[in-house]
Image 1 (cartoon, one colour):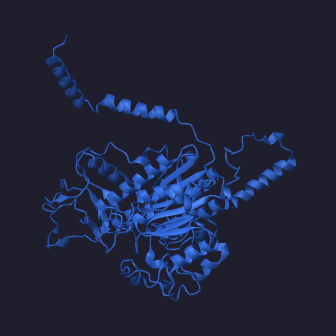
Image 2 (tube, rainbow, N blue to C red):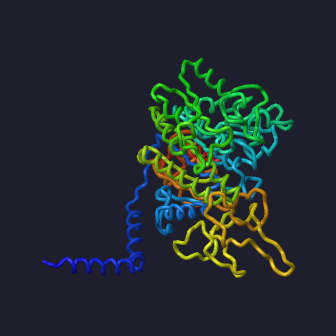
Image 3 (spheres, helix red, strand yellow):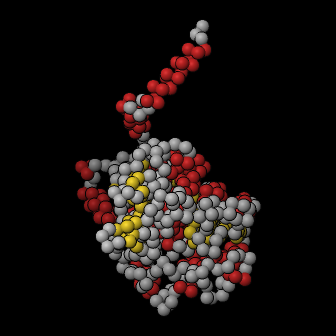
Length: 536
């Protein structure tokens, strides 16, 4: 029998050897081998997508994903670099080119038109093509300047539809699903002005027009855009500087009354407790507006019953509600406040929002099957945050661990523009803020920036697409952003690509005849059909 002390010594030696060789060449060879095996065993899923869930991380560029990955690991006591966000484990990854037709660096309105509608729109326009410039009301009303979008495709196929966002429900990203507008700012009638005369504000389009009025689930913020005289209600005072209704209408009541006239049971909720109290089996439509403007940041959110539900809880409720449909569903989810924290150059808050967004993706995947549910995770655009310097492995991603040539520390996360430009000139040298005694991990810390701007700008580089489920392998390279909904259309057999047979993999299992087997007339019709598809 081996003495206990020898076992203890052996275990100690093995632990020491393992610690020294954790990431030696053998480690990385095994790591690559496992990944290669998984790739070789991957088979394309060519089922029809009964359900579609699209997650938009607003402003979630690749640097944000990398930093959030490290932040997540460090929150768990690890180095961080070696980990993954959940959606990074999806089998298919591609890149998306985000430019607007009239901008190298885009905004969230024109990009939303691209990934919801399948055609690119100009800067600050909603749901209309490049023949409409920002502020053009009458041009936006022209039917030839727009087409139906993903939500309408899904409803036409008998699917239930829903929107979940942490921004206002009338904000740019969700608005492009249901509205056609010459300007993203026309969220309520109080913002139309002279330029918008004759156009319908976005909030009214949501409540009065298809496809918005047919949505089964509407979760987000934006009560102020829907209700006039908000100060006279049970809600907090109006959001300063926001869009205020001038028509003395409460569109939430309009929404409720119209549903009840149809013999339906709609529910309006405004708190976590009200959301949790819903009987989804007895509910036909839900509108949940959890803020007068945007919903609170995750770190500032009131997590009590009278507060605001998390993005993850809203997604869970939405999926439960939409899953009642026998024909499947389409759900659009936006983590919108990733973007807002970046605009304020508060990096920790943006990374926190990204982790909550990732939690929602993980929950959605756990509640659905990869066999029949396509989940796409992407961003509308990036930001100008960079991960800089040469910090050693495992250093706090939010810290200031490095010393520059001027002898002062600098942060790993840095913005090329933003409000915190603490540079001065002493006549011979540029002097900058000394961060030695500053807590750069504080939630309210404003990251240093190179060029002064009151609000940091978007970035113009490509963003990532992560996909899991039926036909997710069609995300495979560098794509125009407008390609995204065409894949979804084909995968789910809805919309303009429902019967598309121009690709190599047609949905039908029957084999197509070769050119030599086709009659001259059949060949002529086939060529004409393919030419017609190119014009669609």
